[in-house]
Length: 192
Image (spheres, rainbow, N blue to C red):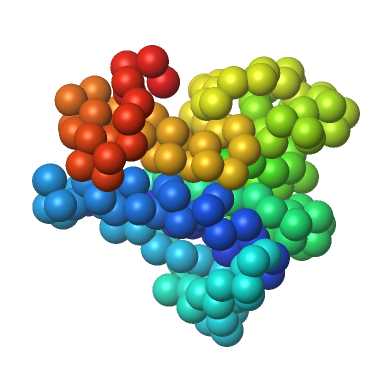
């Protein structure tokens, strides 16, 4: 079973974490026991996301197991999150052993803040590309960018593509495309 941790923080953008959560969990409906997706945060207190959704994390960052994959969403709260030592240290420690360390939208800035994107290809929200380039990142304006074991996805809804891309890497094109079809997301996964 692939263990996946999605990091939450106050003012996180809802779709940035819900979209990959849905896709990376959906595989279990087709191939039971494939993934375990957990929401991790500094505390177990409810997190208020950017648009008001309240979410209860599954586990604290300090108690989290070593994940195979971590997903770092973005949102307005990324500004504080990328300066938060607990989050940056968690990302650094986890990414040293993950299969893939990923981000959605402005979550790329948290990866940059943790020192993981220096001289790497990456993407983020379209209006923040120049800002990300200032962190010595080789910015690409595309939906999903992979550089080694770092995978970044562009703006808000790109979490769907990130999830499908990761499923393609883990379980192959056919299963990834089947998930896209089942959630009625009309995309040719082979193009990701």
